[in-house]
Image (tube, rainbow, N blue to C red; front, top):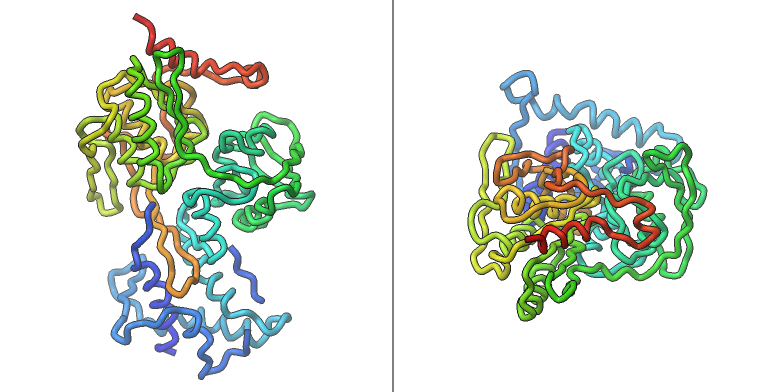
Length: 417
C-alpha cells in the first residue's frame, strides 16, 4: 500500500516540480485492480525511491502517515474497479480525474489540470495559427466565456463580445460540460459552420450566432501613421514574436517622426509575462514595471529593460473590457509611472500569475497560480481591472456606423495644445 501511495503522490509532485512554464473530466471509463497491477506506474513518471513527501494536516503541524492519508483513495479505487457498472474502467482517465480534483479543491479558478489535447490547444494562440472562430476564451468558468474576439476574426465579425458565455453549441446544452470540452467543439476545420448559443449580460434571452470557422493567423502587431502626425500600434497578443515585431514597427514609425503614439491594447487577451515586461520597456525608460507577490509575502521586482525605442514620445493607451493579463501589466505600468494616459473602459481584471508546467511523457500539464502581480504603485487589479484616466464608451451604434470615439479621444489628447 505504501509503495502505491508514494507512486501516486510522486507522480503528481514530479510534474509540479518541473517548473518550465511561463505564465475536467473525471469520468470512470482499464483493467481490474490487483495488488501487482502496474498500470498506474506505466501512466505516471518514474519516481526517485527516496522521495517521501512530508504531508501535514491543515489543522496540525504533525506529519500525517501516508498509508492512513491515502487509505480512502485506494479504497475508492478498488470499489470503482470491482463494482462500477461499466467495466473495464480507464486508469488514465481515473488518474487525470484525481489530479483534476486535487487542483480543483484549491478553489482557484486559474489553477487546473490540462490533458495533452487541452494543453496543445491552450498554447495555440501563442504559436501563430489554428482553425476556429478567433477568440480568446476563459475555460475556468462554468461556461466557456469569451475574453475578447480577435481583430478581423469570424468571432468579431459576428458581433461576439467580451463576457459572452457559450451555453450551447450546435444546439447541445453545455450546462455541466467542462469548458475545455466546449472549446474543443468550437474549434474545427476552416470553412465549417458552428452555431453558438450566447448568454450576454444585459440581454433578456440567450440568442444564437452562426459562424463559419476559418484559419486564424493570430496577429501580433499592426502599425500605421494617422494624419501624418500620430503613430498607431495595435498589439493583439503577447506571443513569441511580439517583442521583435513591436521593435520593427517602432523603428518604421520613428522614421516618420510622429509627434505622439497610440498603443491599442483593446481586446488583447494577454500572453507571456516576460513578453509583457519587454513590451512595457519599449515605452518606459526605467523604474518598476510590476511586482510579483507570492503567498509567503516575498516579492520579485521587474524593472524596465534598457534600450526602449519609444521612451520619450507622448503616448496614449487604449483599453477595454477585453484587455487582460499581460495587457494590464503594460497599461498599469504606463499609467502608474505617469508615462501616458489610458483611454477607454475598465479592463478585464486578471491580476494573478500562473506557471504552466508540462508533465512528463506528454501527459498534459498543470496550470498553477504562483503569485499575484501589482502595478508600480502596488495596486492589485485582480477582478477589479484598470480604470482609464479618460472613460470613453464604444457603443453598438458606434460600431455599426464605423465610428471609434475611443481612438478619436486618444488622437485629441495627443494633438491638443
